[in-house]
Amino acid sequence: MSALPKPVLELRRMTESDLPGVMAIETEIYAFPWTPGNFRDSIAAEYGCYVYAVDGGLFGYAVMMLAADEAHLLNLSIAARSQNQGHGSLLLRRLCDLARGGGARVMVLEVRPSNTAGQRLYQRHGFQRLGLRRDYYPAPDGREDALIFSLPL
Image (cartoon, rainbow, N blue to C red; front, top):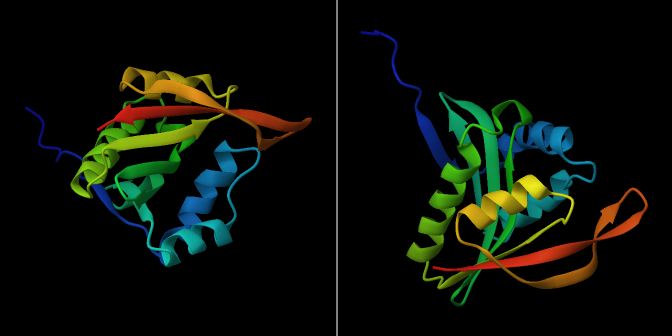
């Protein structure tokens, strides 16, 4: 029997003081990261901005906008060192629960066609491809389309 305590997973509201840790992850995993201003604006607009931490150490975050009966997932990110361990699934399930609790009946999101890991995550959770936004994301050679996914809640 192990005497080691289980790690404590925490999902809490993002604050300005979290931005250095958020930006460290954002710039590590994205070629075209959000800016600190994007996160500050989301916090100020009172979007659902959350950080995911274990024993106080930040390893993921998400930004979700609720409007009427729709949740729009704008950003869901897990630090590179913590990917492929189920954290993205846990965070996504928590966000769906929060969206339902906020009255949302559907969640929508955009994902890059080149982000096959993200697409697999969303499809494993029941998201269906709804459409395409042309030239949505910046890319090294110009612009990249966005795949639109949705999930009834």
